[in-house]
Length: 420
Image (cartoon, rainbow, N blue to C red; front, side, top):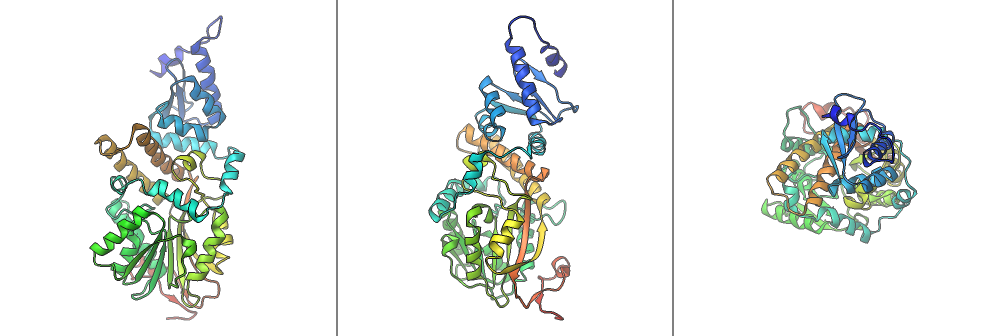
């Protein structure tokens, strides 16, 4: 097939034909993306990959698609894929990973830099969260685990199921925090309530969840009532900036990505108000980058409006320093998130094939690309997943070693110098 298509794109004499124009445009596109793993095709022309066999073939429909890709591939590729003007024949995730690796140093458009500087006001944050998390609880239930945990799982063994890995992630967090029965924990950005309920049920704490997604809070409250935990778990439909409760431990999972670059100091002020100075501690679990860069323009417009992926430096400088807190430990779970997304994508594809995903074809293709692209980004290293444990800068009680985190003990001991 590749040979016959290659033969068909030899230059012709006379006026420029559609075949030779397509060939010229494909070569321009290949030079722009700069990866040896992709082939490029239209109905009239074919440009082979330098690497044989190719990871995938990028097939374009319509000449207008070329213009958008050559002008701004980061933005226009997603729209064209969602609308069926681009198909990827072969390994979708592998193709996206190859593109991410080759385009990582692409200059950022001024428009995207300005967008990243917009401050996330409470009203804007509520609108942005509503557009993503309030799509439908049933929709997320098609491809998340039974607990509806929409964040990176923790695969403590290679053959762990998604359900097992999400439970392991929640326990991993609780062990890092060294939770004790009777303590109060605030969960900022509590999703459908899984972590708060897990902490109360298995670790005996009183949990307070904070979220601005109406659908998620409604679901979490009903689940707490149904499971007999409503007296120990409270879910607030409230912006984090308005939380003024004291706690022994504060946890935030998948929330910092929605805070925004200009509001990280506000997040730090909230931490300063809430975390007890004597014995208080916390954990931030978030998607991060190694260097500052605005969120992918297509993702910002179609999936996560207002999102910003922070660096470790931005989090420590703007949030932790504002809260007068210090880093106790950092762990990178990047490959765990790639595997989590692999599970989600397979479940999503199965639900689509079974006709269980509603919405229109554009929506279904958009979410297929979003899940595959996210998996590829973690595989390529464009995105990281950080867990940062922290405590007040003058804390008298800190974990002495990491030993109890992995030896099967209930959790870390937050002890002082010389503690036994």
